[in-house]
Image (tube, rainbow, N blue to C red; front, side, top):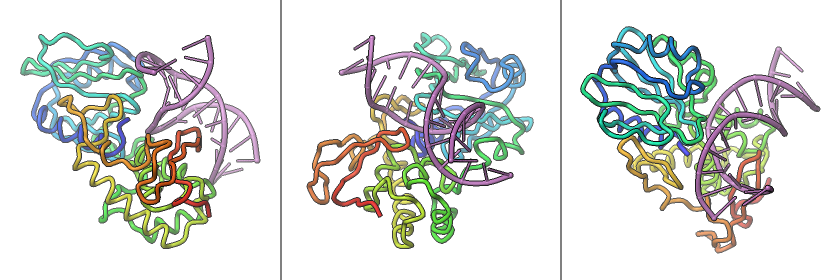
Length: 275
DNA sequence: GCTATTGTTAAAGA
DNA sequence: ATCTTTAACAATAG
C-alpha cells in the first residue's frame, strides 16, 4: 500500500526513466480512473514533454510542457511501469501513455482505486486533496510546536488523526502503527490528551521513520513495487505492523491487533497505554 | 461464501 | 458552520 516512502520511491524511479520523454498519445482502458472527461485527458496530453516529477504527501505530480500537470494518486494498489511497446500488456493495466521512443508508461491498478487528473501546473498544489494536506514530514517543514498545538484541538484518537493527513502528510496504516509504537503511544489515545513530550517524540519519530523507509525503498507487504518493479525492504524494519501475537521487541508482551477507525491497528498493550 | 485488506471522499450525523 | 464518523469504492487471497 503506497504511503509516502513508496510514492517517493516510485517518483525517483520514474524520474530516472521518463524525464524528457514526449507523449505521442494516450489510451484509457478504464475511464473511471480519470477525473474529468477521458477524451479531454487524452487530447490534452498529446505532444507534451515530461519535464519533472513532484510529490506532495502521497500524491505524485507529473509536470508537462505547456503549463500542464497530472495529479496521480495510487491509493492502494496503483503502480507505474515503463515498458517497450512490444511487451505484452499486463493484467489490470488501465492507462497507457505511448512515448516517442517506442516505450510506454503504463498505469496498473488491481483495485481500480487510483485516480488521475490534469490541472494547470501553477494550480498543482491547490487541487482538492492536496490543498488540505499538512506539512511534509521533514525537519525543515514539519514544526513540533504547531503540531502539538494542533493535536490539542483534535478530539479524535491519535491514530485516526495521523491518518487524516491534515496535521502531517504521508502516513498510512503501516507507518502510523510503527511511529505510535516507537513513541509508546496507544493508538486510541485522544489526540488532545497527548503531552508536549509525547508530541515532540511522535514528531521526531515521524520524520526519522519516513526518511528511513525512503532509504529502504519503501515497504513491500504483498504487492508493492516501484516503477522498476523492484520491491522495497522496509518490511524487515517493522516492529508492530503484521506482528499480531509476536513478542514486543521492547518488553516481550504479545502484540495485539484491534480495529481503530475501521483500520487494522497493531500495538503493544504493555508499552503503549491509553492516556 | 465469508472475511480481511486500505486511502480518500461524499454523505450522514452531531 | 464545523468537526467527526461512517459507508462506499473494488478485487483478491485465504
